[in-house]
Image 1: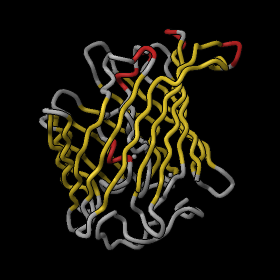
Image 2: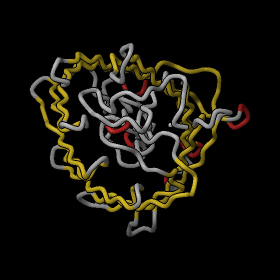
Image 3: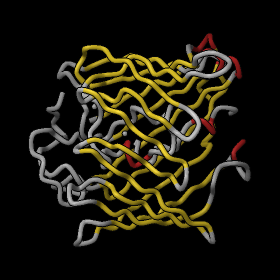
Image 4: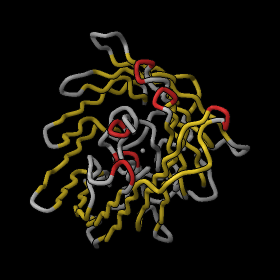
Length: 291
């Protein structure tokens, strides 16, 4: 699919009523955080449906989270993608599909609160042997004294890189993805802009409170990219309110992502729909959350 390269592998998605049967009020981090006032939301799984009508294609992704009992640490997470032929008459996609690619990440936690991980990627169909990075890779995560992710060190074969994370209080302030730097600007507990090496994203918000400010939340995966560990809730808090739009100014006109939401009877987010810029061909992506 032509747009797959725009979607980060939500390895977390891994980045949603602060009270849920599956959440607790223990430490914020997988390490040694001390915040008690906000519940860490531990999702069981996320299912996404991406529709690309202009390309006649669609795909479904399933993210499964395996939590270590009694805490906020992930033992592992899985990511499976199934591709479909788009069919308007069947309201989205046909019932016939193929298992296009999958990924699994397994964590080993250490006494000092840091973690090592091993990731396995497999691909078939249109992605086999193409841009999808297949094989086994590994890395390590280090956390600061507040329990937030400070460094991700990654290695695959002879290739390696480091990602570093900086904070202002509870919120992410800067991410260096091996030279691709993102600077985050917050006001009144909401993220108002993100500046990269070549672009600036601005956000507008509704008055509706974000039910997941701490925990697994894929809020920015389809916009900023490469922030998979932020989506896991280990890189600071998310905005206090739910964003309505994200705008990227460009020479060809503004590109706008819009967000709509649904909640369940308990006030938890049950669905989030992201509508992509018009110039991308009518693409939309719907996240469904299982607690």
